Image 1 (cartoon, rainbow, N blue to C red):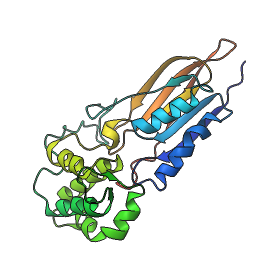
Image 2 (image 1 turned 90 degrees about the vertical axis):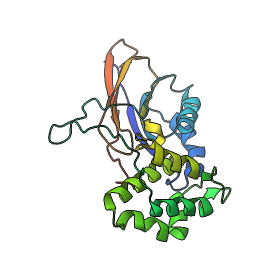
Image 3 (image 1 turned 90 degrees about the horizontal axis):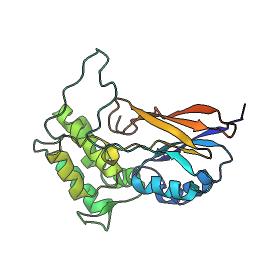
Image 4 (image 1 turned 120 degrees about the horizontal axis):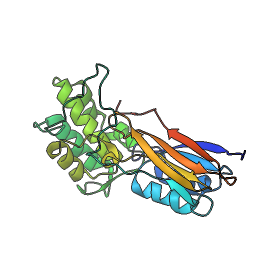
Length: 244
């Protein structure tokens, strides 16, 4: 029987709240491509640019892959909750009602934590959490401790996942106040996929009922040189993170 070596790599490249995101993104693709394994389970490579960079760098060493795409309309394979009930879909945006605390939070992000500063269409800075800690604590805490706690937390959660995905202040405000589906980072896509030196005969993903981040269990059926087929499974179950 053929030998198969599998590596599992959690890159923690999850977006604007990721410390040293740009610096680590510059090195991660080549590091993954240099792995000596036969199959690599890549986790937390969030966002289309991150995934594309890794696939491009690894294409010679790992010419086969199992990549999956989802969006805000994706439904979990088993959406039932702990009581066996399927929750009703959201029909109103997370921050539909006027919320002064949310407005002040977004205004502070725009003023202090985007590039260029003050630009409503600006991109959140790398290590956004450090910028918020330095400049926007007074505007962030009311969303976590406010009098209308459920709504405030819904506003915070939406703002968090939008900014995490490098959405601008304008994009974040529009999504949270207008789109009932705006509850996932990276437009509901996943940061998990597999790379393989050997052909991938088939692949599938089981979508778990997580919030804020799209979590899946991925499977790839890999055909080894001697002709055997082996199923390789890949997942990361440590979500959600800051927004949890």
